[in-house]
Length: 582
Image 1 (tube, rainbow, N blue to C red):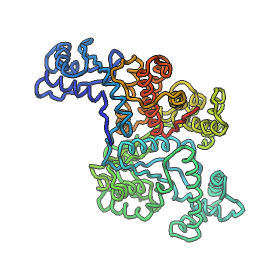
Image 2: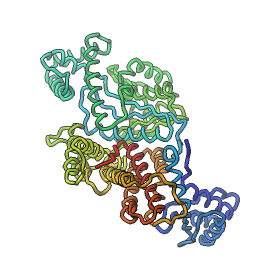
Image 3: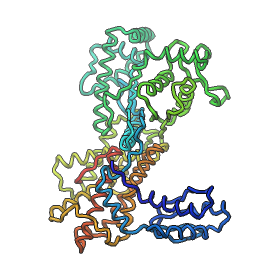
Image 4: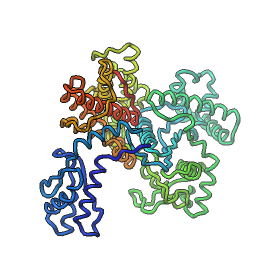
């Protein structure tokens, strides 16, 4: 794959080389601290940062560094207390645009080749509808999977579905005793949700039913054929419902990615026996627990990680430990990500600690809990229905699509009814995903559908419109017989808005590397919003089709083409559609 070196990286290398020449040998390789600037293309703060260590006036050191930059094509200017303002030659910027257009994958380097990353995300429960609580794990995990794979990592997606436990004994027993209650078919998940609530109510109210439900759990765990047959039907029906939601949301998860709790049943006794043999799990009031140094409760007592309960059942910590072991041994993971809400932070800290002490998580394998905040309602509390229930994910998406449809209908769009509906779906679903991904992952955010579908501001719809606008210009150029793909003329001047756009277009690769390192998708969302704004500024100030020179027109069309491709790539990595018309 052809790799284009970013201009910022070229500038950093040049400034670092110049700085090394004017510093003592022991400070060779000092960070030049280069960033984008409002006063030039870039600003280097390295001389100012290191001046005190070498006993020189910052401006003198900056001037000496600037003198050594004379051999490069970069124009330096000493500024303020010792900054360097750096301007890149116009021809360099034009050649960079041409290089990215000509390169495969926009010239983005495959920086994660050789990594095997397992990502555990979404994790709905069998026989229960997906709700707003599943939204963030599903969307964030999927974006991380996309970005890491785009950078060359081998990504193993794992959907740790809740498909086992005592609740299934209760539900299967209730289904068995109420054959008149149908639940298969189109509305199966709503029906199962209702059956589950009815079963729970009967379990709490009728001790005899509770005893029969417990006996059914034993039958399930011991492999009773009839019980297992019903359980498999529940799993299959649920899986179909999950896939329908994933298809609607544009999520990569497939049935092959299912990693249900039941997969680990046979492993759990061995996990616990191994922990006991190593002295990691010990008896605590009849339960087997592991403890992590320094983890104590409010009362100062050590917090237990329960791997086997008093009744002999296994805690979900045992299952999580089994997932770690399998992902290292079977999938050969070099990195494991658990995209689970922030409330589980202590649990995963203890699971990872125990797994390392047991030898299941080697030092060269990174295990990371990727926490996220809560989706809130307008009242600032966790998002609920008016009657206090959980919000179904499908209902939430319906609401967003309906609002997007109304918003788009107010514009003169020129779409056929079928095209309009496709765009409304893309805009509504994209609005929900972008609103989530554009927020800092660890923070809570308010679900405000009117703000989400707005055509202006930091929204998914704004970015989709920016992409559609670019494609519209390119279509108009083709319709007018303007030749596309003409070579860029690097000798032509750059308008300030062209310059800002070209520099921004060069930053996608660094942004993706940043997302892969920090696991924070909002950095990509913020980059795309900045790119869309830079393109709007360019569009407003630099005529493209009406340019008064063929060379200028060709260069500006090249900027449009690269903007379109960059936006489409970024939107796809966020899991958003990029319509050509809106």
